[in-house]
Amino acid sequence: MEYNYQSPWFIEALQKEKELKVNQLDLNLNTDICIIGGGFTGLWTAIKIKEKKPESNIIIIEKDLCGSGASGRNGGCMIPQSTKFQGIKKIVGLNDAKKIVVSTEAAVNNIKDFCVQNNIDAQIRDDGVLYGATNKFHKGAFESLIKDLKENGINSWERLSKEKVQLLTGSKKFVDGYFSPIGGSLQPALLVRGLKKTAENKGVKIFEKSAAISYNGTEEIIVKTKKGSVNCKKLIIAMNAWTPTLLPFLSRSVILVSSDMIITETIKDKLQDLGLNNGLVILDSNLFTHYCRTTPDGKIILGKGGNTFSFRNKVINSFDGPSTIEKFLKKSFKGFYPSLSKVKITKSWNGPSERTKTGFPFFGYHPNNQNISYAFGYSGNGVLTTYVGGEILSSMALDEKNEWTKSNFCKGPIKLFPPEPFRWLGAILIRNAVRRKEKYQEQDKNPLWIDSLLAKVAVSVGRVDFNNKKNKV
Image 1 (cartoon, rainbow, N blue to C red):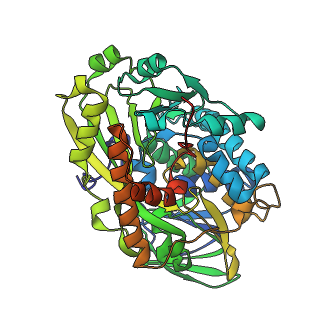
Image 2: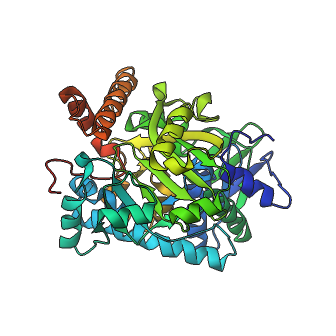
């Protein structure tokens, strides 16, 4: 099969489609709005525009199949931005930080309701999120965050006893942890392919296998593909990791790094014995977290971000293949679940994830053309945030003046990485320091001071604003 390198989610989603029809762009077309990118961001944006202004003519062009990028191969973890509240607040201010937390939390039910209304079976199980500590250094990691969230009336997290954490995770490796009922898991490829069908039902024209080669123009923008073109009034670029290829001025705004995953054979009875019979998302408290969840048919996945970094943010071939850290992931899996050490790992895969220096996404207009907008930098936490991203980009495309378009999220990139080769060299240096630090901490040993110092540089790109300084345990 052509997509064997893909996640099992994507292969499953394609197999469920009775007939895979690929409509390539081989004409010169006119439209109101052209969206480049057929993943979560592009599809949610198109749907939101149609809901707000049904008469809008919209064309989406996608270089491969809709969902073949991060949207169809991620871990399917629905994690709100509440875990990044403190970092976001420092950068964009209190009001915008509260807005993104509340909106991403609301996205859980919004996506669930949308799927029901549009007959999308995305296997949504909103059983919450649990961050656990696997060593003494990570105990009490959320205390400062919870205090801040409570003071602003938006806290959903609670600290659990060691026994409760181990009961919920099925793992004795965890010694502390925090749980929020807001979140859970879904099958991302079924969602993104369902969004494609829904968008088409609303009148959006979608062309796959139609990569954008170039664009030019101001009031009338012409987007060219290999065999055709689109003439539009508004252009939205929603290409995730591929964005710098069309918007090179954003290249220093992110760094591309893989997120890698493995999945087991079906072991429903064994998971039942461990109490893993729901959609709870389980994460550890490392900077580059391990994330884990089960599937409805009785498999378990384990993933970890922060692995393969690409030079000059090129989407390299290794992003479309088996994980380069498969052995490490298998070892981690056995560490979390020693009773499953003989279970067969049936597949590993990875994909590019773009990390911003702030750890959260940004939206903006092309500096030379306000008719071109973009979204970028979900930093490994896009399942819920792309839903909000669709609301933001639709508002920008329709020239709405609202709380989103006036927010600090819509002012483009806030912080930049150093230029190459320093960005790539620095990323490798810091990644290795983080790995050594994690290894020491897992042995309850104090990390080397130089590794702790280097790891601090990467704190903002993580999923969580951890407070591991002299935590009260």
